[in-house]
Image 1 (cartoon, helix red, strand yellow):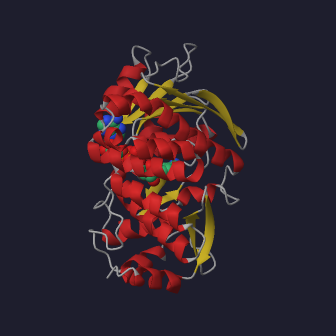
Image 2 (spheres, helix red, strand yellow):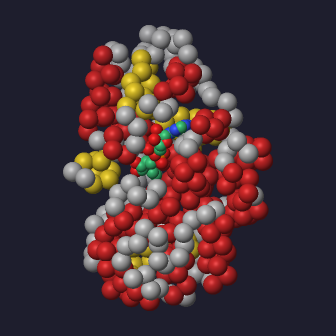
Image 3 (cartoon, helix red, strand yellow):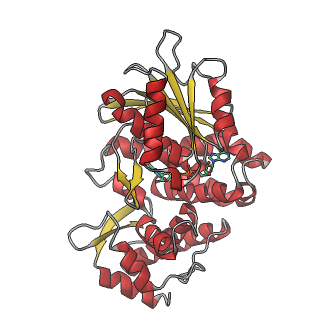
Length: 360
Ligand SMILES: NC(=O)c1ccc[n+]([C@@H]2O[C@H](COP(=O)([O-])OP(=O)(O)OC[C@H]3O[C@@H](n4cnc5c(N)ncnc54)[C@H](O)[C@@H]3O)[C@@H](O)[C@H]2O)c1
């Protein structure tokens, strides 16, 4: 894949390859404009391999969500200043969604906006985080409290970078891949369904490695199409990407942040969304059952009573903090025969749904 998308007033080129790009490919110029690579301790070797002998500066952040705060933003801005980046300077974020969100935020505010390329290195960041321009960092204990919309000028998705990803992170990303297929690519859902063994084995499995560039391209294309239709989430299209997330975020925070991966929580949330859609006679039963079968095959816990063990009351209480709550009603995305739709549901109805599912 090598295709340009238009996200509002930005043009963003998405390039899927197997091997890593070089510095020139990600936008480094040999004309005096400076480049800063941003990575974390687990992606430093990938960033150094891309930077090569370009002379670009490099800043290494601590890994993980705990580092997605103002301190890291300041470290990136300080490194940019030290490396003498001007407005024609280039920020290159190499890492998972934490690094790509932080780098994109820093690039969007540095001197009122510098150039930006992203090289996502987790499946989640390739399928979702690095595409579409949402930047941000966590503040006061709230995820992504501060952020901007700034799509990268180019996003490079080299599937070889996934070879070092820990197994749990790989599977966590797969929940977003399944979500993306449900939303916008039926033939991707078929591929996911018929290659369970290869994909569950990980990116080194020969068949998974062969299928990966197409899988990543399809996910990127679905996300890009949705963002093109609704770049700043003022309409309904972009909100569909939250399939499974209202339930998932609530489970994640009520279970204690860090206990479940994002993907494990989202997969459980997709299962609950299927149940909600079925109870409202919106999701056809066969569709809901197929999605549940796929999630189970990929090893996710889909049973109403999640092993992380939060009560229905705790989960509903955690939803009250969800920023997607509007005018007293919670918004949920539920699957349709093809694609998904938004429903507004009162808290008490969700409480009943979770209790009837005997979650307690
Ligand atoms: N901007 C968006 O639209 C959007 C969408 C979804 C998620 N996100 C954000 O993405 C973040 C989650 O992203 P994530 O799951 O990629 O987490 P992450 O960035 O924390 O990466 C997960 C772990 O994998 C390590 N890692 C990354 N690439 C590796 C590689 N190739 N080999 C070995 N280790 C590697 C990281 O160092 C980290 O320890 C959250 O902060 C979330 O808010 C943003």
